[in-house]
Image 1 (cartoon, one colour):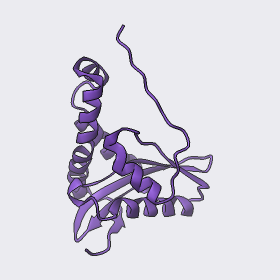
Image 2 (tube, rainbow, N blue to C red; image 1 turned 90 degrees about the horizontal axis):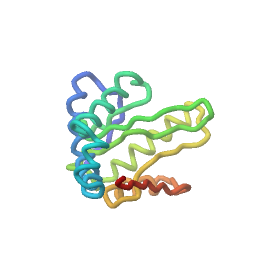
Image 3 (cartoon, rainbow, N blue to C red; image 1 turned 120 degrees about the vertical axis):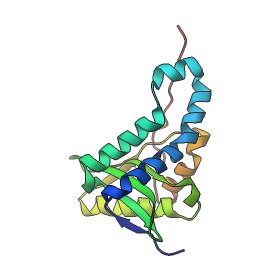
Image 4 (spheres, rainbow, N blue to C red; image 1 turned 90 degrees about the vertical axis):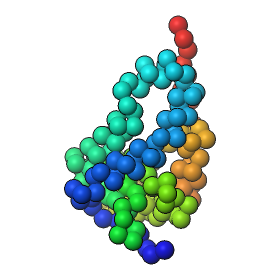
Length: 162
C-alpha cells in the first residue's frame, strides 16, 4: 500500500464522498433503527437519512473547503474528514469516514493525525470529537483513542412513548 495523500476535494470527488458517507453510516443508522423501533425511527429520521448525511457532508465541503479534506490512496478517494476551528481554541472533528472497503489499514488514524496537525497549525489548543457508545461506532472509538483522544463525558439519550 502506498502512503495516503490528504488534499482538498475537487468537484469530481463529490459523488465519491457522498457514496462513502452513505456506506459508512448505513450500519450506524441500521443499529439506531433497530434500537428506536420503526415508528420512532421514522419520526426522528424522516425521509432518507443516508441521503441527508451525504447532503450534510457535501455541504461542509462546499461551505468550508478549508476545513475539509479527502484521503486519496493509489489515485482513489477512500475517505474524508471535516472539522471546525472554534474561536475558543478548540478544534472539532466533524463528519469523517473511510470507505468500508478500505478500512483496517490505519487510514482512519492517519486522517485524524492529519486533521489534528491542521488544527495545531491553525492555533487550536484542544481538539474534540463526538461519537456514539454503541457497537456500530466501536471502530471509530478505537481510531480516536489510537491517536490520543480520551473519553471525558459519556452521553446517554432517553426516549419514552407517551
